Amino acid sequence: MLSSKSFFTALILAASITLNTHSLAEPWIDTSDIYLKANIQLLADTGHIITPVTTYPLMWHDIIRDIKNIDLNKLSTNQQTAYHYIKHQFKLASRNQTRIKAQVGFENKRFTSFGEQASDKNSISVQSSFMFENIAANISHSYSHDPIDGNKSRLDGSYIAAFVGNWVFSYGRQSRWYGPSWDTSLSLTNNARPIAALAISRKSAEPFIVPFTEFDIPWTVTSFMGKMDDDRVVKNTLLWGFRLNLKPFKNLELGITRLAQWGGDGRSKSLSTFGDILLGKTNCGVDDVVCDENSQNPANQQAGYDFRYSFALLSIPMSIYGQKFAEDGSEGTMKYLTKAQPQVGFDAHLTVFGKPSTVFIEITDSLADCGARDNIGDCYYEHSSYATGMRYKGRSIGSTYENDSKTYVLGAISQLDINTRLTSKIRYLDLNTDNQDKAPDNPLIGNTVTSIAEQVWMISTSAQHNYKNWRFTLSAEVSHSTFVNDISNETDFNASFMVEYNL
Image: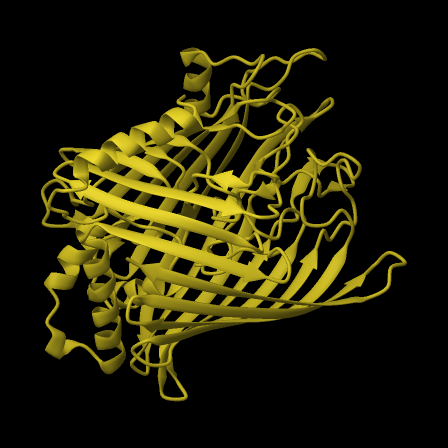
């Protein structure tokens, strides 16, 4: 795997080739713009965008193809607003651009959702994207004054990619989001910093034609292999990810996700081991894998599926969505596969106070039954061999609320006018419900949000305004926490301000 220095050098070389050439388009939609996601989802839910849209980074190729096929006269007012916003964002992505961002805040952000770009309170970044013929590159260098993980200088968001037929090969640090949710996901989110990874993705969701019928199913697939190069129990652990996304009907989208930690210092990195991972044969005592007291599971795996079903009620586009996601593992002599945990949600695209809005409700449960008597909790995102678990740089790569939590979120994503947007949320969070932690005194193991039970009410809002080449984002949140333990209640306030400028 390339070092960060070598990676940065490769990006500079790619940029020098493309600086004075004709730009085509940045190939991906990343996880930084929840308003773009909401507008794409509205047109997908109403049958105008037919490509699968619940896997990010999301390819622009099919999105803009479907947009060009839309008859504007057949769209409602809210759909026309979405149509124009998507076209404008594609116009920005269709040219070489350099963007400067600066953020200041009172405190580091405790929870990170789709569309939130930075958890550190004070940071500045410079990002340049280029594309020429079959090569694309994005150089993003940032500096954080007081980062959570201690890494002040970063290349998060940087990548270089090549197109070969209908496939895209890439290397970089890209944030990923797997699933139909808005606030968080049990599988893979942008909660943790992105991992440097090699990836292959389908460029276009060209449909599969069911034999002897005219029935076609658009589908896409992506897979990556990354190295978790942070401070952890098993150094240089490899992370493999796989996502299959298909749309058998215009109003039904399905997804299958697999994640696996394997390899690392002192662990097998052989093809046969990876072959066992592909077949799911890595659990002691249940997959014909024999483990004695001194041997360890060759991998830590997660797997699950998700769906999104759209319909209209009183001419209002609505959807129900959800996922089930399971963790494997072993603890001492007890071998288990944890019960799959659920997330369910409902959203509607409607008009609130005369403004087009997407309103959603999400319920997520990461308190897993570990398969042993009186042993519920402390196993989701955990593992006995890969003891740091599904975490990177001190944050979960899945749910922003970590394991053993039950969360309830009501949110609204609104377009106030052509240049101004607003996101608001009310959350009730029952964190670390079992009031236990695997290793409360070891920062490399266990729950990264709280080591004790905590109940949180939180209200948050974020307002975004564009003015010419400038974008301003003001965010604020207030929370009130109570604890089962003999600890005084806490009320916290946080706010941040971000300025972006497109050169």
